[in-house]
Image 1 (cartoon, rainbow, N blue to C red):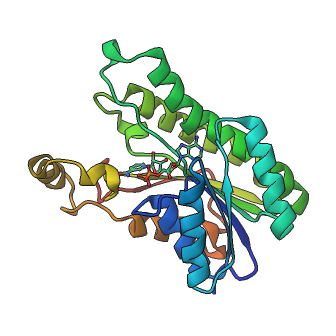
Image 2 (image 1 turned 30 degrees about the vertical axis):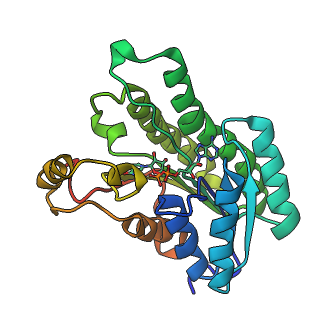
Length: 249
Ligand code: NAD
């Protein structure tokens, strides 16, 4: 097992359906990590914690809003009270509020930036303090290929995800000397509740643009996250790995 004895905190991991965070939680638990599942929705976090326990793993479900710094401090304290440390942080919580620029409200802009970018800042700051004392740690931030190439109707989302990439590189430079690796993953189109709602022809149009001719799965993303959390990637930091079937080349 690659993560035996390690503690991983994953934000936005509570979608009991097909979310990326849930897939990461189950994959890391399968490698022996104890999992802290954080979600805005308490029942969704508890449902995934039960799944981890059913696999024979250990999990703690916590309700928190990553956009709220005091909520994040409380969440990190609760995780440490239970497991004494945090070795791995996965900043996965993210939302969309799509609209064309001229129709986009200030509320739509703020909601996306608050969760997707400020949330990453809040969680990284709180957990990095522990990791710096431990002189070891792995941080993986969920960006998106839209943060690299941009997308119509997603100025807020793309800006937040591009911001996550710049944040990742800055923090990787700051924390490298403390033995902390900080990387980002940029998924393309992944089969989740969001893409399932898409009409068949829109989905087919997307598949035709992807060199590997299929949407990704949450498990495709989880596998790369596992790599970035394991010793196999110990000399990798400040990188952005696209998991997009070649879409954003
Ligand atoms: P999802 O909507 O299925 O799950 C996100 C989870 O985050 C939900 O359970 C939600 O309750 C939680 N959440 C939202 N706001 C929160 C907050 N403020 N505090 C705590 N939890 C909060 O999303 P997903 O499709 O699994 O995406 C996961 C991540 O991957 C996101 O950052 C998303 O931007 C990114 N991503 C997804 C895709 C895709 O195709 N699905 C592509 C690229 C990037």
